[in-house]
Image (cartoon, rainbow, N blue to C red; front, side, top):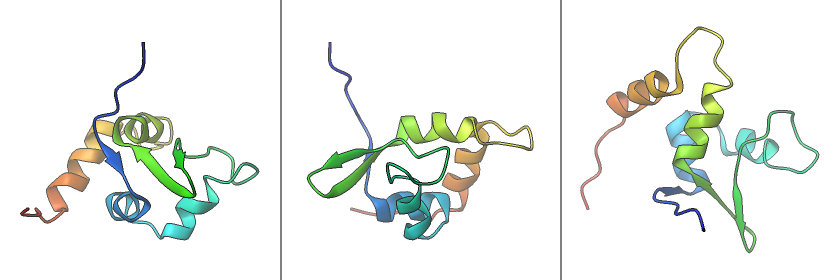
Length: 84
């Protein structure tokens, strides 16, 4: 059974969500890049990120006792809403 990915992020969207520069993300997606690489998919030459996998990855990175859900809620609360 294939995994269904429901929320795909571009590198720009991920950089905004994490409030980091795109280069920081690129460094963590290279095969021999920084340890603790970000889970990602390559679509041709484009990088894509599963939001659920990113949140799970974040939960392994915390040092202050915050869960990924708490970090994500803070990010979502401060992010302006987009109207489509």
